[in-house]
Amino acid sequence: MWMTWKCAVMGLPFGGAKGGIAVDPTDLSTAEKERLTRRFTQELRDVLGPNHDIPAPDMGTDPQTMAWLMDAYSMQEGETVPGVVTGKPPIVGGSKGRTEAPGRSVAIITRAACDYYDRPLSEATIAIQGYGSVGANAARLLDEWGATIVAVSDVNGTMYDPAGINTHAVPSYDEEPNAVTEYADTVLSNDELFELDVDIFIPAAVGNVITEATADGIGADIVVEGANGPTTSTGDTILNERGVPVIPDILANAGGVTVSYFEWLQDINRRSWTLETVREELETEMVDAWNAVCVEYESRDVSWRDAAYIVALSRIADAHESRGLWP
Image 1 (cartoon, one colour):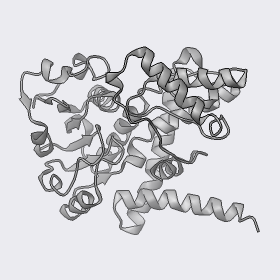
Image 2 (cartoon, helix red, strand yellow):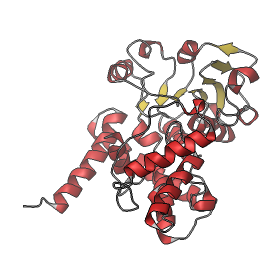
Image 3 (cartoon, one colour):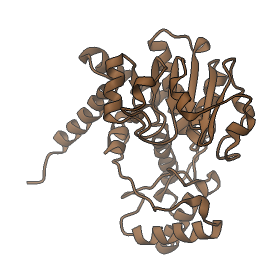
């Protein structure tokens, strides 16, 4: 459902689904992961296809996983079908900029939110939960744009520096697992991260972290959701009652599926884009989506999440009405 709404907010001609394998990939060898991915692809082959269901990366996967999936599907089809899956390495039909895209969109929307609330990004302090692909890419881009990243975390704890962290000097979880606390001079607990007095808090790790138990303690003025579903309904209600704006995941982290769409276009047309083109197109799509949500937010006196849902559901309803029903 969330993926359907996310695609609708971005104006993408995709629906939504989620699926995966209940396994810890860190417990598997590379050969085991490859065999598991290829068998999973074979089991799903009847429902996959560039015009049917197009998988994309999520937790526990990487570009190599997507390449195995593409190859396993293509071997059964008797031809190379790069458009069956996105998030592949560029050498086998992937899009430049795909890995960084969710974090990049979080940074773009964070910048837009700062502008909306008249908070210069150069004066903003930001704390980020999670320093994987989404969190690290968002942190580094916001750092480049002049924001002060005062805290980043992984499962072991939180690196904290009120003067600002050099995010490019701290390896992401993908680059060096568990590096955050090893590189930190000051380590806080992950509970303390939520309570930091900052302008913006970006939960970019896992779902269901802002809950009834933690929402009251959030010290940030604005929350921008980097992970999928980081805020429970109760947590959301508490933040709304406290007057803390929450920019929802279906808008903020939609860069991933948007560049997946770009990758699909490149694959079916057999023509790759430059990294500059991908970034320019992503910027345009994110700003357009932000502006559409802003219109509903301002005209209907609703939360940012409800405004995003209004944009998504209205577009889906209009599409159903235009297509009609088979009698």
